[in-house]
Picture: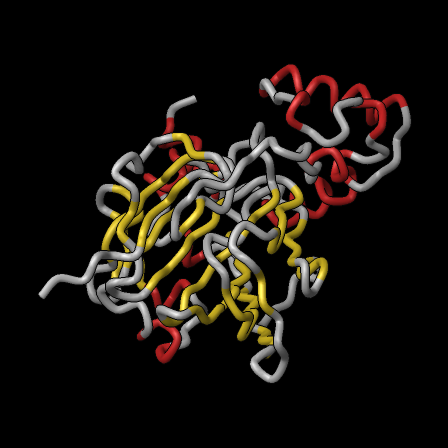
Length: 285
């Protein structure tokens, strides 16, 4: 099937119904059937179970528990770096935010304001800043970790579409990451504000954070905001902050002069959680 046709089909498929069904099936305790499905998935996508804290496929009672599996201790050592990669995956895009505009793919961009749910004040922190968009494929480890230490300020649920977020769809659907359902997590660090945006997609049953638990479902019709600035919720660099129940994309936004990405980071490059992502820029006179 051509890439163009694949994208066009997504406009007519019942994405919300398919996602709800996938979420229910992934949570079922199906015994031998669940084990068989997991075994097929591991073989189909080349999942390395030697990295998992529990490597026995039959030990997972549901597909969700397999998909959000923990890694064994030492599987992802943390680099000596100011910023760490928060996920296993591939770099979709990264670079400078041009005023408010974020590059998605050739011919497509979107605004930071749209991405964070229309909050102009929040988006203003990232004018001429830096962004990185990381895609998690089905084979990847699907827990999300902190790129640097931060104090949690807000979580914003933004309703939206459920297009796939694979590279082909990113090339074909305008404003994809600012159209799909997403959870915006706002933090404060010594250099200023930064956000991690968990972007939903077709078949992504739910998204969860360590401080809230499952955020969706339910899928709400309106933006919903949880404030934490009157609490002292701090997460260390490298600490788990959330997870996808079936895979998706994470978009990170940083303010101007907060991060210089590692020279090895480039679009389409594979990355692993805990590797060096970047450093604070060196001040020059």
